[in-house]
Image (tube, rainbow, N blue to C red; front, side, top):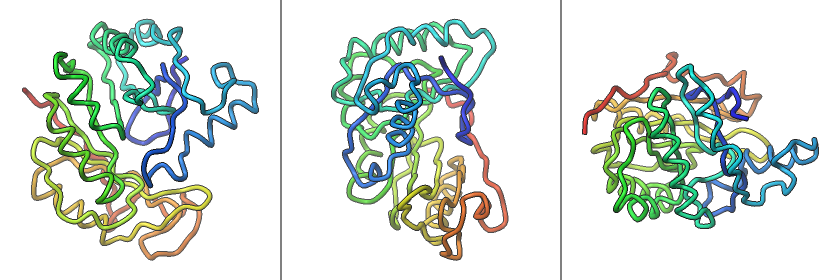
Length: 247
């Protein structure tokens, strides 16, 4: 079933697909992979194969059964645009999104090149936010241009984990940016100046900025528990969301 999420920028998670494969440095310490193996050990239905990519058609109807409006992060445990997910199954996910306009759906992918291919002859529902992960210059930044090729009401970037200074980025037609550091075993540090660079660009471009967490390393570069490092940037919590945008 869809579950309440502890991810700061969403309300519920909906996983019609689980499992994935690594394609870039941001995947190195994948939280979903760790969680999938834990759920398998616990005997949780749907995770019998651990983190092997698995389609769950029985979960497609979950949002249809919820009458109260909510925000879903789609496939927090996978990537909807993974090369092993057929277009026909993505079609079914999008159809559910279209049938439930009272919900908002946040879809995030690292397979950005597939976005303009899939949506070449399909429309993006107004309540479907499309986003790409941007962890570094080599792999992450080029995904932004692929996202921009798709005509979507809301486009967003998840710059988490931020692994280096990504320099100047083109935020044209981007409506929301999330930034966060890495946590968990083997977490890599995130420097304050890297975050500030992104925040400054969002401010200049009038793009909504959401700072999710420092992660395992605080702004002082000291490693400690995530809760102690907190979510404040320059003493302020940034919980901004995109405004409604007309195509």
